[in-house]
Image 1: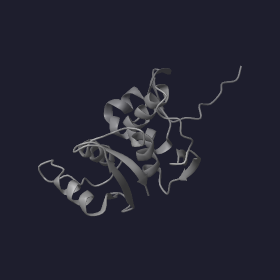
Image 2 (image 1 turned 90 degrees about the horizontal axis):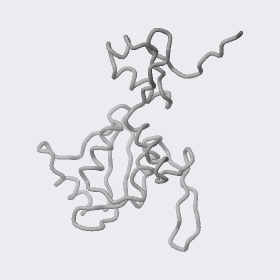
Image 3 (image 1 turned 90 degrees about the vertical axis):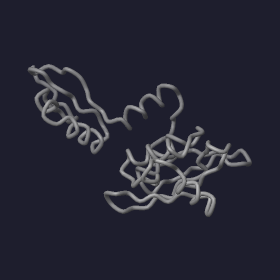
Length: 167
């Protein structure tokens, strides 16, 4: 009898106890779950928050976008393919394109993806609102690689917005 080698990352319960954040980093980097073993048996699978939210969105039928491209319906009813220059931009587009959101929610999600917050030191969104009033866009910078992402937003009310475009 031959055993098939798992082609996914693995960790032990001890590894999880020592550093759970390290296991989450592995899941995020490999874009797959990390199988957690307890005495040579699989005890569970760990995934990152963004992976979990993507899975829940797919299960609820909210996210049906292929990798690196998203079908976008234009104003005349034609479907166009949208290409993203970063994985982060794709994640933001998938998460927010068909939903209304507050600026705080958007900022919290972008910070979780590694971008520098736009909120003031008191957690307010005044600076974000000013930037939107001036340019109808928000520009975020990734703290890890200094890559910039520009979000074009459409106001739906005084506090809720929709994403028009991500670059």
